[in-house]
Image (tube, rainbow, N blue to C red; front, side, top):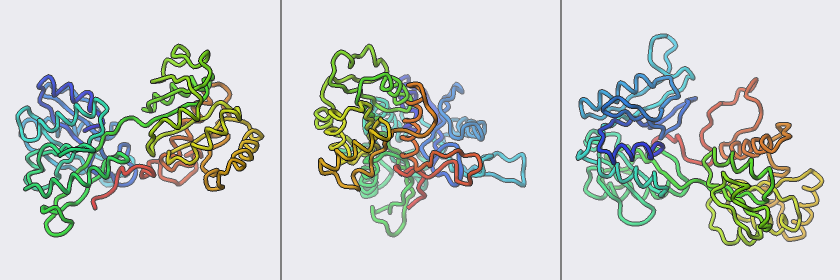
Length: 381
């Protein structure tokens, strides 16, 4: 639900009733992962997607049905090669979809509206919903923030909500969506509930060092991929907002000094495009010791080997140096700044999801991998 929070928060603000279908689990090759959402309002307007087209019509009908009956439903869609008319996924995988009506004044509606508003505003929040039991049928929900008490209810006596909040806060560290099993009394034993935990976190940071033409192209691609993009350069004449209109911010500072001032999480990516030892070495000396997702540096193979020599002299270990992606990007034969930006972005995506960067043609590897860095798609635990 949180993946289309801006649109749904507007629906809530206008008092519109709607039904929301959310992918709960995904097995095998599927177009969308857990958390993907399709919503349908009382007028039949649709927003979002759960399958990229395979089962949208069937899920749309389920949303309309849920609005009419007021009842939640959990439906499974797979692939049946023996029935060519069956509604399913042509890619061969299977998804479980939770369809929940959301009506003003109904149980959980205030909590859902608050979660959608917070997520749309860029806050880090988790939304917990029960998939079984009375709470699941009634549409109860729990809103969990990194700090403070949770809001809402799962229909328990407080112990279930407390345990759910602990699990939700653990997932907020990296983002993602998953189902978990939690006992009614808050333990992992005895009668248990299956809970869906969705999280929304602020956009991951992309910091591009070096106010060059390649940086302008990369800022555009980074923004397209959902990053909050910063361009940093010590030269004020080059580091201007006019030159980088797609960057969220442009900073004039020495790269290593700016990096020292930032608090970055494990999703951040750092792209060093200066290929000047005066900037690169002190910057990379710090960057390669940070728990970020990606550190890449531009330059030729010759520049790379000279840079490694200087970094070793600065005291970096071989394990730290092994984290450096240099020359930056995948081998696409790129020539223009835009092609180079695509090369860099492709490597970032591959690193995030455990991709190889090789053509899919002729390979037997799954097209849709289980997330390497995030907890998307885990089965109930």
